[in-house]
Image (cartoon, rainbow, N blue to C red):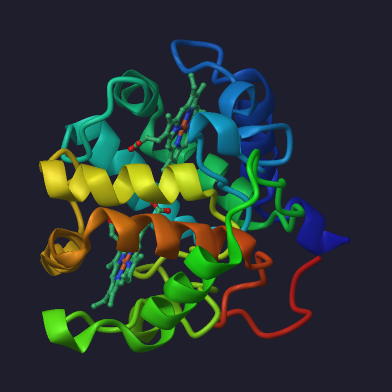
Length: 212
Ligand code: HEC
Ligand code: HEC
């Protein structure tokens, strides 16, 4: 029992922020990201469940600083203290919510093109396979390379566009800025459709069965 009392006041706070907001200017995250962090594929609200906690904190910091330029998330992230960002990130990182179905089924041809890009890339453009960094099944690797499996195609598409437009500039070494600039619209749609079909497995860095 000792474990239950030795710190997880934070975990509780994170759950409370997600469901009710922080009692000041940050609203309930669940209003957009879903009760269980499942996201809303139709509205491009990302899935937060099962993303690495440090990745989530980095994104909240980037929104607050405006390096990830988003008018919805900027005031929300700014309204959270560093401790609250960490607590709510820990809460979402621990969830293993099922993936929400896409509003429209993608065609199999697009998914096949996406799968090839994810595993092999497109060497005619100097593009590595996405899986080189994001994990072979898009499961994410550590705090740097987020999970793409189970993220909606609308959201993935919106982020690839954000790197092309220069509205998301907080990526380490500008790895994604370089990659997004090489993808044409058809490739973006295909790779986004592919990752949306994958089950949101636990991250490769987490030993199997260690949580939940
Ligand atoms: C009004 C809707 C709304 C609410 C409420 C909201 N979000 Fe968001 N959130 C968004 C949108 C839209 C995006 C995508 C932004 C973009 O395109 O860059 C996002 C993105 C994020 C991301 C980035 C995820 C990723 O994969 O990079 C994090 C982290 C996040 N939100 C955390 C939170 C937290 C924590 C709360 C509650 C304190 C919250 N959000 C409340 C709409 C919302
Ligand atoms: C060289 C390594 C590398 C490769 C290859 C790579 N990525 Fe990424 N990707 C990253 C990093 C690093 C981030 C996190 C950026 C940040 O922290 O803002 C990221 C983030 C993303 C995100 C944002 C996820 C979220 O939750 O907001 C998407 C979408 C994405 N990558 C798609 C792709 C696709 C599609 C490909 C293949 C065409 C690809 N990536 C290939 C390094 C890579």
